[in-house]
Image (cartoon, rainbow, N blue to C red; front, side):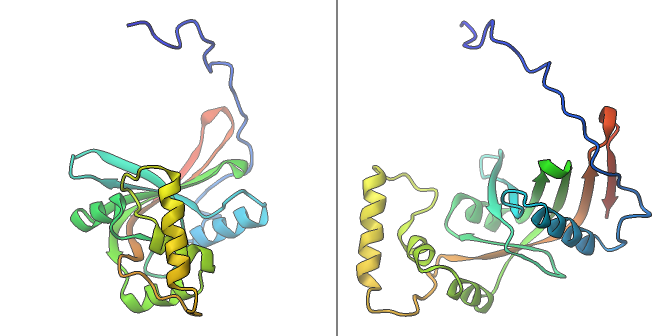
Length: 207
């Protein structure tokens, strides 16, 4: 079989200089949750695009590692919280194998954080409170979207949205779908990474 990219230029010439700061035990908070909060605030202050974008990796029933990007919605003393359809691929995988990993990357600041731990399903009260504060369109979408399932085409999804808009037309407070909720990744490992010149990067790990 011929390589579709045979003869195409590589990326050997792509080089960036990482020189946005240093990471040492002296300038890092002893509490990894507070250190992560500082870096999140710095990313937001630097107007980084989607500073709370977080890749979550799970183990599937096929014993493959599956990764996708979600949004970190809360950082608490217990862990990192995100919300999703519990019947989605990641929800099903976390239900079977709660051990997971998360990764946040801020390229503009030459920083990234790796987290490993166990995902705990949030109770219904916490999920209800968060769902109530979502935009109405997102609430409708949570009811309409069969996340991770195969659908015929975009028109089918749009039809489902219209059906939900009719269903809740006279409802001021749309209730949370029973299949939608939150997860808290409770870490047992943090690793903070700061890019440095000549690829001599700084890493600090908390366990």
